[in-house]
Length: 353
Ligand SMILES: [Fe+2]
Image: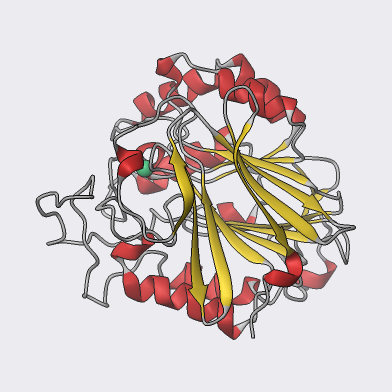
């Protein structure tokens, strides 16, 4: 039986189906129109601060993207990791949000299993299974047939199509030795950009996948990366620490003329919007971090791409799409649901030359 004649299996929701891969398609697609997407990161159930789940639920999002550090696993003991996922399951607000939306998820270091971890983490395969089981990834999900938890999701119909590219920045990531140095003024960590071009962040299989996925037609495209895509000065983990991989990402976007694309990220324990000019294309990264804890001092770290101010209240990201007006608003909301950062964009502004 060819891939084209495989029946499409109902996944996650009644209309959410795995791609048959006869032409370039996302790993999953769902015809439902999406106009409100929320996201968040860095949640420790043991902090007992559940307010952001309720705040996000009140926004009635069509999708919620959990961007990593969704729990603080930090263990090689898979019984402990499962127990900690159980603590997230016990949070009523989490369950209500999951039941009310399509929940997509990736991991960052702590839920992967180890602080600042990468491919040398010895439990990565077992951790992947626990992750996919917890987030109800279907039995026939492409994510279960390959290493890593990256995946692509297309929602809507032509003219109102939104593709979400969920990256895995952990499973394949090389260690970056020699970059842990004493903190400099304006930094809050130890990392510096590496010059060793043999080091990978996404790994070759995920890069090949991304090259294919950028062929999928989309009226809006969101790159969901656990770590920040533009930042490089903070000394924290980010794409800027692996500049040749960051350039590869931008070069791929240019090659495919991936109009209407921006990134979302988490990890840093505060919220900010970053923007970099890619030869005339304004590439944005909206960072929301701090579902249960934030850091005022980390929010002061240098970021020459920052637009406006950083914010250290508990926060969530909110993306509101107006398909009729062909516009999108990037926003950060606080626990009251107030927009403490908002940046409207016309889709016509997001065009590669
Ligand atoms: Fe992290």
